[in-house]
Image (tube, rainbow, N blue to C red; front, side, top):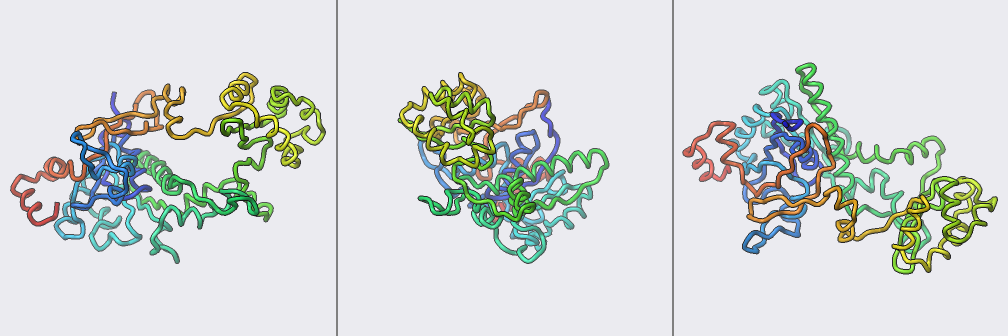
Length: 405
């Protein structure tokens, strides 16, 4: 059974998160991904701990950050700042179907690795540039970081506790959400471009900007503002369009209760021993419950406070009321459904140990993904250059001596 992208070759000139996230998806789907890394240093994330230990217990430069974004790739160490190195990468690009890069806008042109230069070598290439702000415009030359994009795109303005409450300030997500979203959008675009090329024989350029992806995910909040002129405000753990739908404190922790319709609300009131709330005109419909949220929240919170979280969650489930725990990561991987889905896997690593990985969410019935461990720095340099460019031992030795590899 072949993988969906078997036979597709990808030149990966990306670093950190957004670009590597996209090319990791392609690797999971069976593409051969040649990741070009700087000799001696590699991807910036190789320096961001914690680090995998090898079979002898020694620390490596295979960091959790790197392992999370580079599954299934081949690592080639080539110095593209040297003419010989750039020429090697151009030759590789001519043999690849896809090129993905996330350098500053326009900076690869001096190495002959920009879209026009690669298209001259391979007219049907699909070339994706992942940038912060796009290839042109007043911000094109600015460096881009996830934290900055979360602020600029408005995400932090709607994330966090409300003004005037303890901890009430704009809040970022702990994961680099704008990087990841950009990588996912880039993956979608690349798959679309591959389909287009299959149908027409044409390659194309893909402009994948973090700003675009980050603004896009504001979704209904952005459109609501455009329609009403009213700015959405931070609501903490409260769902602004449904009530009760928030975090409640139990005797031994916190849980989420999210009753989305009248039937669920009535069932919640019954199991909490307060059926009169469901009959109260102030809470008759969701719009009424939202308008009187604070009063309703106080009434429910008082009845939840003395309950144990596990017992209450079981009761909610039996009653058909949506609820869920707020798990620490150790609890996530002990969760019965997480275990059933096999979301934590261990992959044989070149260091002689099994490295942890998170299962790809891409699940195909006919063309399942094949998850392979991220590479050690430069692990595939010589093998790939032999196979793709036909270099012999003498040529490889000379390149090593001159510091190109």
